[in-house]
Every structure is written in C-alpha cells, then in structure tokens.
Length: 586
Ligand code: PEP
Ligand code: MG
Image (cartoon, rainbow, N blue to C red; front, side):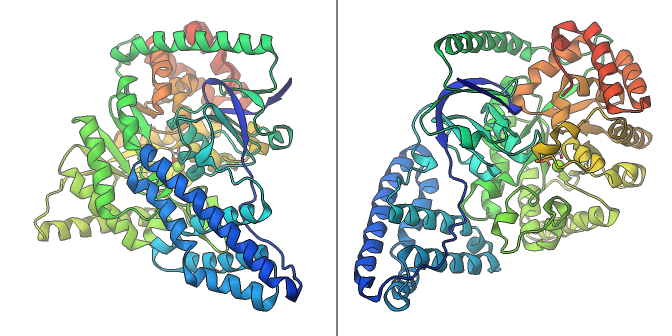
C-alpha cells in the first residue's frame, strides 16, 4: 500500500483500477535504415499493422455508435479512411521500398509532415484534424511494435486514468460510464482540465508529482478528490474505511441537496443570486437540480474542444438554443470563445507560443480570427430572440478590445436586421474582469459595459504571477491575498458608482470563505460549478452581509495573504462552524 498526495481539484471519493495513459503522443521516431533485401518483409509488416489498425477501428466504430451516437462515432471513419488513402500510404510504402527505412520511421515521418501541413492550413477543418493524425500514427506505431493499442475509448468500468498531464479536450472526451476519476503528475487547481473534471463530477487530483512512475495498469487505487490523497494497492481495512466514507459522503450530499429548494439569503435578509458555470448544455438539468438560478458563465470554447471540427453557426445556435430550452426563461450569460492558453490552439500550432497564457488567447484570438468570431456573434444574436441571453467578452485588457468586439456585434446586428432575422437589439453586453489592468481601470470600462463578471481564476494568476496550471507554484496561488481583494473591491466600487452589476464566476467563488469576502465587497451574484452550489448556499444562509463587510474590510488591510486568510477563517469558523470547522485555507 502506498499513499501519495497531490492537489485536489474535483471532489469525490472513488475506488477503481489504474489505466496508465502513455504520454508520448509526439510520434517522433528517428530514421532507422533497413537492409535493401529486407524491404519486402518490412512492407508486409507495415501492411499487417495497417490491417490490424483498421480491424480495431471498425470494432471501435461499431461500439461507439451505440454509446455516443453515429455523428460522434464518425471520427473513427475518418481514421479508417486515412488508412486506405493512397496519398498517405504511397509515400510510406515508397520510403520503405526505395529509401530503405523502417516502417516506423516512414509512418512517423509521413504523418508528421501531413500534420504540419494541416496545422498551417487556413481552413480550420484541416487544423482540427491534426490530433486525429497523431492518434492515427500512435495506433500504427503501436501495431508495428506489437504492443496493445488499448485506447481511452476501450477502457473497462471503474477506470482511473493516470497520466503525466491531460488536456481539457482529452478530459472532456473520457467515456464517462467507464472513467470514474483521474490523477496527473502535473497541473494546478484552476487549470481548465481541473474545471472540466468539476463539470463532469469526476473526482480528480493533479500535481501528484511522479504518480506515473509509481502506478501500473490494472492496479487497485483509491482517489480522494476532497483531500488530494491517492492510495495505490490499498489493503482490505483501507478499502473498507473508504467504502464507509463513500457512503457517508453520499448521505451528506443528499442532506445538502435538500437546501436546493431554499433561497440563498443572508441572516440579514439579502438575497444572493446563485448561478452555475457550464461547459456543456447537458449540465444544466443537474445545475437546476442543485438549486442554480441560471447560468452565469457558459464556456462556449468547449464546442471547439469536444467537436472534431470547428462548430458551424448552426452547431452553435443549436447548442445555445438547447441551453435556453433547459433554462426556461432563467438568466443565461454566454461568454464568447476563450480559446488559447491551455485550451485548444497550442496543439494545432507548429510552433507553440512560448508564453501562451500571455499570448494570443481569448478575446485577442477572436479579434484576430474575425470570421470565427463573427460566426459566433451571429449564432448568439439569433439565439437571443429565444431567451434572456447576455453576452460577455473574456480577457478584456484595454478599452479598444471591448469597443472592437462591440463593433463586430453591432455589425452582425445590422446584417441580421437587413436579412429580417430576429435578435434582441437590447442584448446586455458585459466583460470579464480577469486581468489586473481591467480591474484597475474598472471605472473607465464601467462607462461602456452593461455588467462586469470577475474571473478570479485568471485574475489571481495574473495578479500574483502564478501559472494556474503549474503544480510547482500551486501553494502561491492564494485568492485570499490582499492584492487580489483590493482589485476586486475596485471593481465593485466602480460598478456601484455606475449602477452596473458585478458578479464573480471564478472557482474561488465556490470556496465559502472567498464567497463571504465577495459578498462583503458588494458582489450579489456568484456563478460556480453546480456541485459547489449547496455548500456555498449553506454558508450564505449562516452569514450576514454586515459581518461579511467587516471581515472583508479587515482582510484587505493585512500585509500578507497568510495573515488575511488565517483571520478570515478564524472569524468564519466562529460564525458558521458547521461550514468552516475543519476547513483550511484553499
Ligand atoms: C476565470 O478566469 O476566472 C474564468 C471564469 O474563466 P476561465 O476559468 O474559463 O479562464
Ligand atoms: Mg479566465
């Protein structure tokens, strides 16, 4: 039995079996020569590998059509098509026959060249196929090496994925019936991979240092997503102990769930609006079930992360419409694509950015990819005729970005009007405040925006210069830091002066202590993941705004984050012990 500790990022306890995900998907194989006489045998070896790969893909296609629907399963048809495509096969075969290199090198070289061409292609349909080419190469290489080509799609029940790192796309693509949790060597608390885990209610621990070198396939494992503990090869007593904990947690969840019907009202009678953050439309029923009053943040970029090609205007319109149908008139804030940084774009690039979090991300990416951006704006506007949608732009850093984004929105409105297509001309347009520059200039922005939504995930990262995905600096990622609090206070002040609502949709709002500080600074709308809603509500129902104001004021005045958070927790523990007892800074 071995215990390992990492950073807990998605709550829950699970007992399962390890599936070790190979990291090296770069499919780079060095040149290896073969004897000229050996070429026919090597060609035959390639042929056998190709046929075996097709047979696997056929089986996967059939299986997944039942599980995911025929549209999603089409991806396997693309792979099968590629394995029969002469433009791919001819160069591989000729390299083996004429250049006398191994099938491994010929496969790797040819598919890498093609992937690089696709990545540079101006049409995003080609760009989105880069990952597929990687998968294809990995499959062929594993067939050539004779190793099992077990892929994520074919794992058994109660599988816990162990990987060095996972992209949000990989995580979103897990077979949710079989994968019940994951652990990674790398990663931080608010990385988008962690956020996806929360959305899928998948217990997860990241930053578990070298778990990949300690775990092996099929091993029994316990993952405690509440504390960040991982136990490999647990003994019988430990398993029994965790089974009991799982049972108790389920009972506690049911009792918290009973709060869903009650309002989120403070002891001095102030109602707080509790909304949910979603990545997929089908999260909404669960969100409403947990007592969410609407959607405060729809991370639309997940349409890119899960789809195999760029979502069309129609795909997007349908996704937004589906949300509206679930929400039945409840508030719905759509954030325009927040691509870049740890989401999507880097893997398509031939030369990834050196500092993607400071790079072409979010609204910057949208403004440079106008066609994509305008398509999204049109889809949102069309959906605005069907329900109460607000639109929000991410990562606004200067006023020109906001004005440009708004200009495109107005242009699309005009086009729709000319075409006689309905939309809401008075749609509210807001911005995320997630960069210190935007917080410091909030009073300027307040003259032009309809609302602010503070994104603490990024605001903390950029204020404290701590990469939100880096486990090495995770202990420095401290939302209750006087610098962060001052910035949030500046935003609420600016909002109040102009009567502009200020909400918060960062993960920290799900931490009852930070939620108390937000309320103390004047925030009246919180948007968090569905599963966090009951606990936040319980805290709110035990707190008064007056006390929150006092605590926030003191916390802002401390010299250090350590003093601030220990003060905040000590105070809150006295006021609402049932929520804060045993809870530590986090
Ligand atoms: C944030 O930065 O707080 C936020 C909500 O956006 P995201 O986590 O998607 O970057
Ligand atoms: Mg953000």
